Image 1 (cartoon, rainbow over the protein chains, first blue to last red):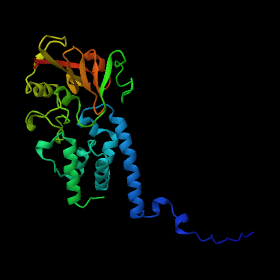
Image 2 (image 1 turned 90 degrees about the horizontal axis):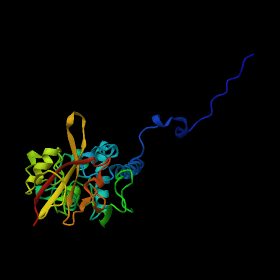
Image 3 (image 1 turned 180 degrees about the horizontal axis):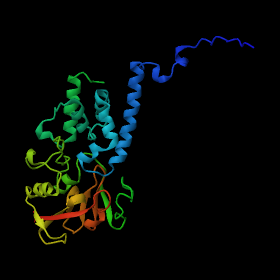
Length: 131
Length: 151
């Protein structure tokens, strides 16, 4: 007995395609996703570094390395984080140097995280990363 | 003790062996605090992010590098951490690495009372009764004592 083949119902692209085939997310959605990921990594890093004094060690921790791995997408997020930390900036300088190859900090300001944060925020303004 | 650290990080810090003396801050770290600088973070990292008191081309995260930094501040190697009249001492801590090397992790400074003062990374400043009180998985143990005349 022959069976009648029914035509498949029409599907909208959003339900028919696997997410991996759905193409790039919108820029706004990607930015929001990056922000969420960055904030999660910041929390993870702050927990991982504990009482470490070593700039080298804290910069090699997995969460910090993942932030560096975000590349240029991380720059405005790091600068916004630095700005939000006010007079108690975290050590985001290794990440900024790694990603940008820039070094706007004067030699006499090394170790002075407040002065270093100011230098990087001015650099960010000049480079168009102001958020 | 209601500090920012966990008991696992510093098993030797108890209410009887230590006391918090200032709030947590990221402005300076233990090496700076041992050197009496409460404005900068001292570390000889390759990106020159931290302050270091000796020329940039001699920055190295080794026990010898840390000893050299404190020599530049007038300290000499010392045999122990006992309180001595008119003498200021520091202890440099580290973690043993394979091959006999050591990675420096921390420094503490002896107070005129004989107690020690430490800044725990970006956490609080504390006093502790013995140098060994901050031994543990984070800072390892004392690798060297150094001393200089107390001003």
